[in-house]
Length: 225
Image (cartoon, rainbow, N blue to C red; front, side, top):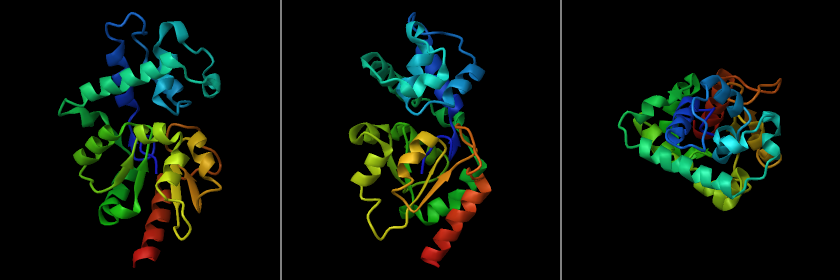
């Protein structure tokens, strides 16, 4: 399952990272409002895309065109600086307080603890920040693959295939709030669940937090009880 937009509403943390980067950098916009940031966030699937909101010479006026852009060296450079800035902020003991758990996380936490081997986290967020967040909220033992793995294997689906998660004999459920990440899994897994509470636009086939929890809880009961 995904992390941002599924387990945690982490948009404010990402906003703070970008604002931290913008301080003292003449090439980056300062004072981007959180509302504008959130409007942009709804279309974003990777951290490099924040460059098209913050770099003064590259601001994308039509947000709906974001998915059509192929990242270049400047975009990847921005992404690297983004994760460096986040690493710096991680040194603050209170950093994890910027992360807001969804009610779904609190519902799921007992299952994450009891059935840890059954869960995998697959996220464009860097692994260290995921580990730090889960530790702060008292969850451990979950296999995590962050943006480093996605870069290496080119996509979330590539990571899943590399790790053998889609081999026959496994019943696989994939949960994500971003339709662009969910779609490649639709013919590869047994069940795809669109988290209607996340950053992307909900649609008629989206699921509520309560519905997703009931599905996961029921499947685990069938498998283990």
